[in-house]
Image 1 (tube, rainbow, N blue to C red):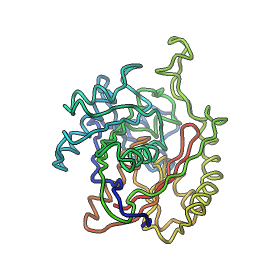
Image 2 (image 1 turned 90 degrees about the vertical axis):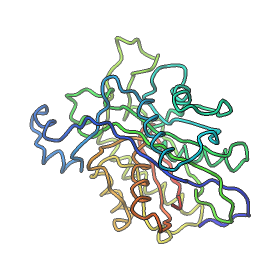
Image 3 (image 1 turned 30 degrees about the vertical axis):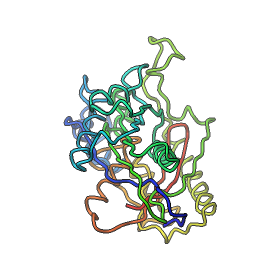
Image 4 (image 1 turned 135 degrees about the vertical axis):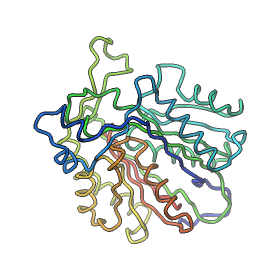
Length: 327
C-alpha cells in the first residue's frame, strides 16, 4: 500500500472482457504455414487459440460489448460516468474518434467527456495513469476506460512471425474514487525509445504513405526480444528504486502478455518466476487488453482477497511502463 493523506483517490472497481466468437487454432494455422506444426506453434508462443474479429466487426463494436458486460455485471449507473476513453491503435476511422460512437451506443450522459489514446502494449498503464490523474484532481468522478484492438486486420495471413501471436479482444475497466489513506493505483513510470519504432510498425490508417503503398504489420521479433530482455529489467529496477519498492511487497507480477517465450525469460532474468503470470493460451497477444484480461481473471478467482500486483507494459513505440494496483 502507498501512504498518502486522506482524500479521494482512484481505484479499479471492476473489469470485463469481450472476445470475438471466431477462433483461429494452431491446427488451422499449421495447414497454412509450411514447416509449422500445432505443437511447434504452441512451444514457440504458448498460444493454442486466438479470437478473430469478423470482417464487419470493428474495434468500437468490441469495446461496446465489453462495456455493456461491465455495466451489467457491476450494476453501475451509467449516468454517473463522466469520462470515457478508448485505448486503441485500430480505430474505426480517422475521425471522429471511436470513443464518440461508443458514447452514443452506450447512451452515456452528454456531460461525459470522450477521447481516444493511440497506444499499444503499454497502453493500459498509460490509461490507469490518466484515469487516476483525472479522478485525483477532482475534475472527474467515474471513468470508463476501454481497450480494444483488431490487430488481425493488419496482419498478412501468411506471415508466421505475427499471425501466430496476435488475437483480437477488448476490455472495460471502471475506475471510481474511494476515500482513504492508501492508494489502490500506485505511481506510474514511463519510457520510450523511438529510435526502435520500426521494430513493430504498420502503415494502415495513416497518411504518411498513399493507401496503395501501405503495408501489413511488420515485426522485428529478434529485435524486440533482445530489447525487452536487456531494457526491461534495467527500467524495472529504476522504477523500484525511485519509489523505494521491493519485489517481496508484490503478491503477483503481470506483464504484457506478448508470448510465453519472452515472459518466461523475462521473469527468470528478473528473478520472479514464482510470481510472474503467463495467461495467453486461449487469447494470444491482445495488445493493450492483455493486462486487464489477466486482472479480471484474478478478481474472479480471488474476490475476497486483496492483492498488490506489479504491472508492466512493453512493446510498440518502443515503449514501456510500470505501475502497481491493489485489487
